[in-house]
Length: 474
Image 1 (cartoon, helix red, strand yellow):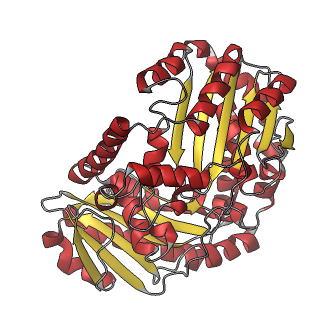
Image 2 (tube, rainbow, N blue to C red):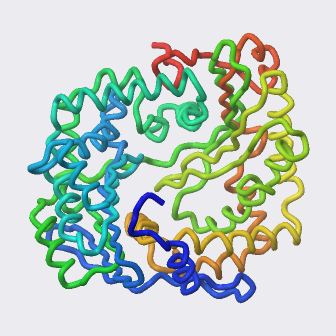
């Protein structure tokens, strides 16, 4: 760990985990520490969770809206705004702002998501006033400096180009979303494309900022060693004067699932490997059957001994890893299987992934595998709540989606209660049939073009194209 104040953190983590974790066999639930909620007159939601076990405080601020607010053709505006908010705010320029954070041994990051902008900070408890001041400066008084804007935009464009030129795995999901959610807001790249970033101006960032940053869009969470009365006073002083917004946050409607197959082949000439993504529309964050879906995905592609990794890595040696997962948003995001393999084994690996999905639908999950998956999830869940930052992020997520403490407190009970009927419903409703897939392949088109045509109609583009989806014909 990078922070000196976390010397001995292993012992502290174990002590905390011992308080919130319960042996899987006992079937009891992990419990969130107590917290209080209040809403300021301007609509800002605040949650305070005092926790005295370490002299640390984490703070998370979420702003409803996110990249859904980007103007069409200017995708990446929200992402650039997030980057620029860290490059000078209040009375500090970029260097001074970074020094104020590092000088206190703290951390502060701003990131953009599809549906929200997130500020996350982690400081010593003695520096709570500084932390709140820096976070409120970044959110309410960003400098949005023209010189810094040019730097962050240039770096964003260079990063995309570098990933395309090197290992494109980090971009596979972006290509997948763009191909699956064609003409739907969830298909627009949060980080933008080389093409869209080139069109974004500083005025675009300023307009987006004015649209989004309002009191009734804010969720503010603090977790750790602080005095609640002092925190309430400081947070109200920092955020209570922000006016309410005029327009509601942007929201997406549910996208239809893909019927049949369609293939996007992205040519990366000379590539020695093919990266593949097989997906369809999955399930939302608040789906009532999300626990059973999680259990099923653990079996299919959510752990090392999953069906996909066993078939593609352990048994066949076709890849170093294969997995699957859901992108959880207000509306159903993507469910996808992804992996990569040597160019000559492209079809063999994809066939194996598809046949594994077919086997899930045909055979379901047996008693032994179901019990193993449930035990795995019960053991993996407590560590996700070990730190103040993890708790702050989870609590903010719950408030964002309108979920109560039962989202955490009832997790173990819900997992333990999953039975075969719920498993089968989850498979049928949330996991695509092998016949209904949006497929993305990044590889040497000359070497694999003829072979992959069997998966469905093929559309081609080049990895060097400055976008993540083929251009629509007029």
